[in-house]
Length: 130
Image (cartoon, rainbow, N blue to C red; front, side):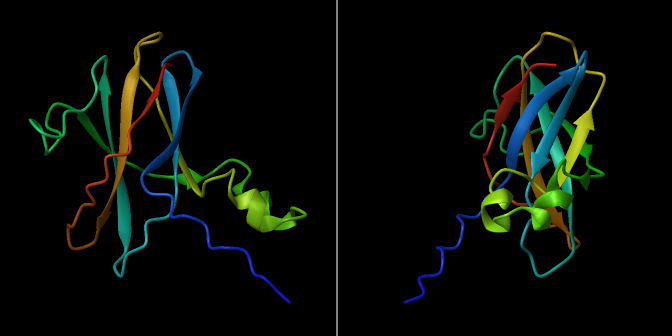
């Protein structure tokens, strides 16, 4: 009897954030599923977390429209012995944010925006220190 693997749980929002040098952090995220073409926007703050209750529009954060590149190792997934398992550890998109204060803690959040302006409202936040 063939028992296919369970579909993976959707990976919503930012999935990885790591300091990659003095003043830089690389963030990684998965593909947003939408009927319309999507782009991505990053919100980030230094020193204090997002407050989704008093600042639901994230006006206290820096907003950056992302130009993603293919995630590290993503192009090698299909050559893996088990591509399904390999996909669990890599992400299709990444971007490196520079000009950050070295040694300071930052909070990062990625939202998808479709071509008609609808922005997702996930609250997936990760921290990283450049």
